[in-house]
Length: 123
Image (cartoon, rainbow, N blue to C red; front, side):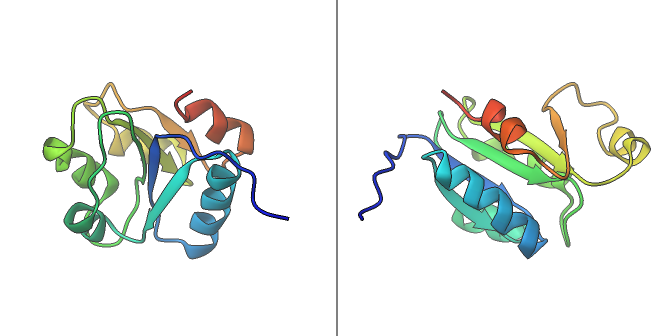
């Protein structure tokens, strides 16, 4: 039977260094009908990705090399409509330290549920 999912015009980018976590999140996003692009580090994402206005970028706060916050700060070339959601498996204290001074973007705590992922995705 052919895959009958209808892909939305929105792409989702995931920057996550844990392969198992990335695979799980990517499978959920794909099952919801979104085109998903996975990157293991921020540098690779910044060199090769080109999100558009309607796209969404999930960024792990703790990445090898550039931190999630550094990746976020480097997204100046990304269109202003591109949404960002941080993800983290760290303690709330560590998250608060990483997010100090930032009002946005929101942070989802790992392990992510399908519902949390779904609620973050554009309609």
